[in-house]
Length: 161
Image (tube, rainbow, N blue to C red; front, top):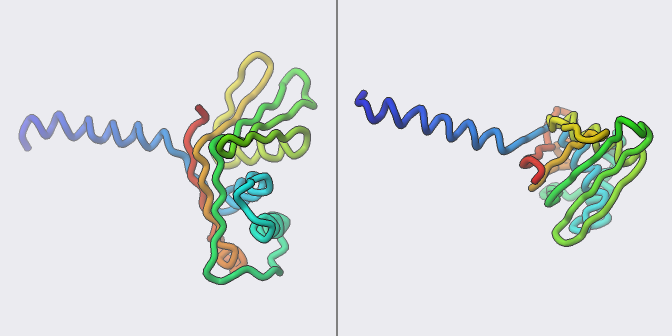
């Protein structure tokens, strides 16, 4: 191996590792929960898709869904805050394009905990803990989930801006 290759290969590997750190992913249970909690507020989903996500998260797999269809849940960002001073305070901001929605209370805590379950590391600042992501894309195949073999739910995301 020549000297150039000895120099370039480590740089390529380092660049790949840095890029991989910028992208997160989750699958299975945490992906289904994340998709269902974000999807219930998504303006891009229709009622059938939101209902299917809710049924699956509730463990109710007795519903009809077209065999060749999947549900794609996208959000530009999801940022949640839990106070460690006012321990009853929980809030989340979800962005779907120019549309921004808020969650508070139990619903916000559920989404905050799901982000952490999905591998998002919370960060602290001035009495609050924040967990957030951007560029969320979840793909849910309800018929694969209904097969109860552990598959059918995958999400990718980037760190919060």
